[in-house]
Length: 591
Ligand code: PEP
Ligand code: MG
Image (cartoon, rainbow, N blue to C red; front, side, top):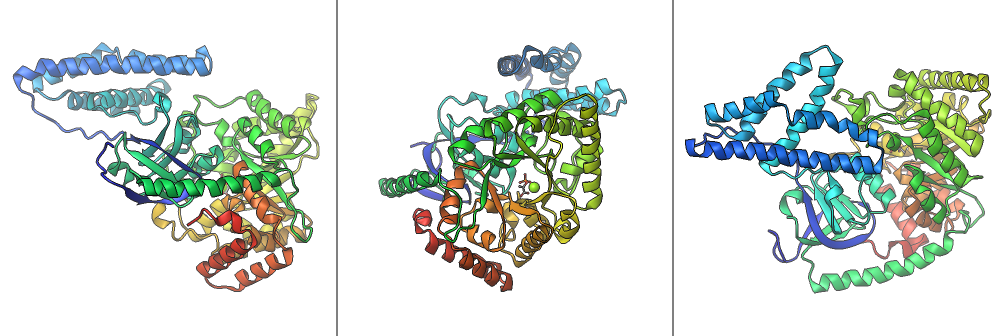
């Protein structure tokens, strides 16, 4: 037993990805640089200069290692992006100035280095010349790495150093860091902050890694080397579990194993209610690597392909051809099932660092998704052409995220027509009748669903955003997670309004937000008339298990009750009761 926690101790957070794991904790410290000036004794000045020079050497070695790994995983030319970093680490003008300051002012190396580089950063940032402005980011990155070494802060964004399986504990994990997690080494993770429908949580479910967010100060309380059990069903982290606790979890594992057998049995069965209503059950994916899991869980294609993950964790935009190849691969592998490609939804909590966009005060209300794409027609059209070209190779449909009104929809449609004309002119094949849908994830879109329905072939309700925008509760902020209520009457009315408008215009309506993967809410959504549900592949078996035990009439009664109720908690309790009675096996390992 190591670390500061002695004896068994339980921490609680928000469970976001099911599963139990146990192992050694690795705490990712935030790269906080608290840089204070310290006076050095004359005798220590040489030591301080040496410490500074060593930090430069160490940073250089680390950068070369990062470059080597990048070249190994991509191409030699990609590694070139680190050349300016390496050059800056040898810049004698800066280095000599720092050493002069350490010697003359008898100050600590981190303070001198920070002061000097800050001055350069400020001067370069003011330059109009693109060359200097690009160098600002390089200098910031290099500075931060040198300071990490001087202050001995481990670089939390470099998870490549994991050598043995561990439970990651951190203040936060960005979606781009989560996307890089290696399941071989990451048993599970827990963060201080975050919400159930943040993209970090969504990725954890997609990777099938048990995870908890919103565990408050856990990253400050645990230490690397602590031993913990993480329960992603109930949102608990148990440090130094006793034999009794381990025994109890052993019993739960047995229950889980018997449930898994039942779930495997439904994988190849249709998603049909007891009274014969077929529900289209599809999968949410992030890239082509998810194909195997989609097939393994018997999904009827893809209901949401979040294409933005092709744009992050890289140093430049993917080309039209690179995108085409990925879309083509997915469409071909899942044919004849449909694959709904959602056009790029960058912004909010998903950023492509290479685009170097200015920070916004309210990123979820800002330059995100279709707004960003319509302002970058060249980039958007490259994606549209890639999707259109891939539509010749399988059953592809497309949908736009974050539609707030007709103008955006019309503009997007016009760009699609322009791209189609370009392809026609070059005799490049594509599906002329490719179906286009709109995501309904902004309250304004739900309220004008009747107008939108005349102009698209389907609706896909993005409940993650619909809830945050309707209830003004940030989906990534654990402090307002109590307000983020899927069963709020306002949400249910908007869903009903959307479904009714779709049906009145002869199109279908699905749900691809996280509520589609919550078996507790499955009967309610069926009762509201939803035609399609799309969720992470790993959760689909449970949703199907529930669908196959539901009678549509009873689900409709549940929805009627919910639509008449004024209380989110009353609706939630009724849904839970209904779900437990309908499929008790799904709930045996929940608290
Ligand atoms: C949603 O908002 O529900 C959705 C499916 O899109 P995303 O989670 O990627 O914002
Ligand atoms: Mg969304």
